[in-house]
Amino acid sequence: MERISKLFSILAICVVVMAHQIAAQDLNKGKNLINNICQQSPTKDLCIQVLSSDSRSTNADLKDLAIIALRVAAANASSILTDAKRLIDDDNLDPDVQQGLSDCKETILDAGSQLEDSIASLLEDDDTGAQKWLQAALAAITTCDDSIPGSDDVLSVKSVKFRQLCNIAILITKALPNKA
Image 1 (cartoon, rainbow, N blue to C red):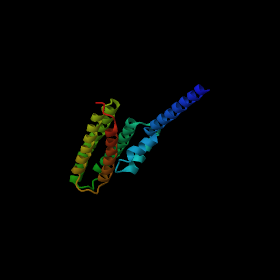
Image 2: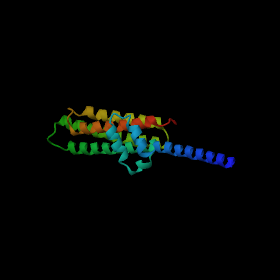
Image 3: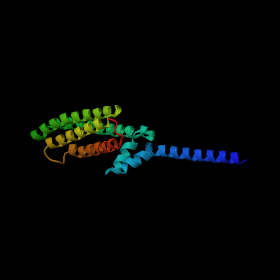
């Protein structure tokens, strides 16, 4: 009888340990991971909104979340590019502003490519490379802003969000275990 009692005790301990391991794994995926990572962001609400916006976030790990953030940032860059193209053709704009928009259009194209390079780096487990491409994309948006006179234009407003999105991706990539 004592053997059976010990066997049940050992089985109970194994079940408890396995339950704790499963619970720990759940903390490192999906909604719990999003909440944990976004607690560190100065734009917590935006971070949660962006990372939760993709249906794949339900079971996502850090790498998946970084890719989600990068894709949202790329969509934002595409929106900025669309606005720049539309504004360039506005005959009522000052020629200096039109030239600035034309220059900005080129740097936004670069930023979009750099975000794609960042995604490619992540897919190759090159977290350091991903961070470098993200920094390059941030530099491109700064160049864009600097090329347009004034600071109240529609692109400047959107570039603030672009920076926030890139900073969310940087936060996540810095949390990844370094593999390269």
